[in-house]
Image 1 (spheres, rainbow, N blue to C red):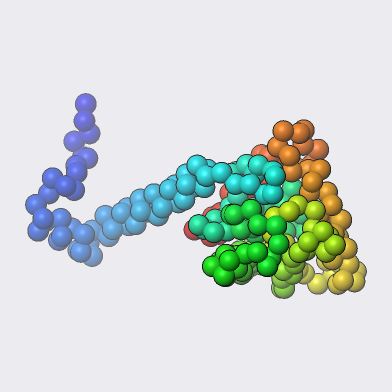
Image 2 (image 1 turned 90 degrees about the vertical axis):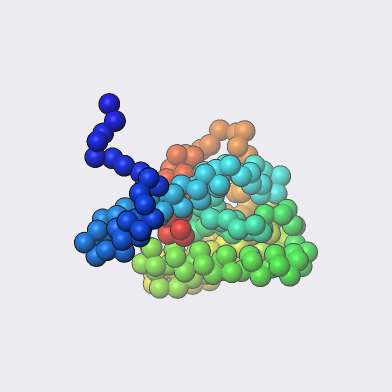
Length: 205
């Protein structure tokens, strides 16, 4: 049996609907509408990310690991982060060297890194950010796909500040061994990474 207290706004005369939505005594109507709209937007963004495919050089990236994307860039959580919040921002197109990015890709990549970095710095209560690119094999790049390391920083996280670059270099060398989804994971599980991505995704809605 249909609930007699439920009704469709579309069945109301236009003047009555306008009065209800504008009346201060009917604030729950507006509040419900706002909540529904926000939930719908969040669901659409989550579904749109899940429906997309991402690659990082020759490797497939599970969409659950991606927490933010534009038409040109995406951000993903890290399999073995140096510090909490250490993520990667990459162009969607597979581009080996920074110089090979188009002007639009370059701008979008850095704007994405800026936005992601700002949210993660605040979320992790950090006080600074390190942005790092290893552009080419001699610079330490092991995956032939441009990517920016975005790393929230706090005082004392490394004994000497420059040690972070050695640590980035060490993690970079591990990427080729760890990213293949067809191999057994020995580090963080996909579930752990997906949970972290969900947290970060909510920061960027």
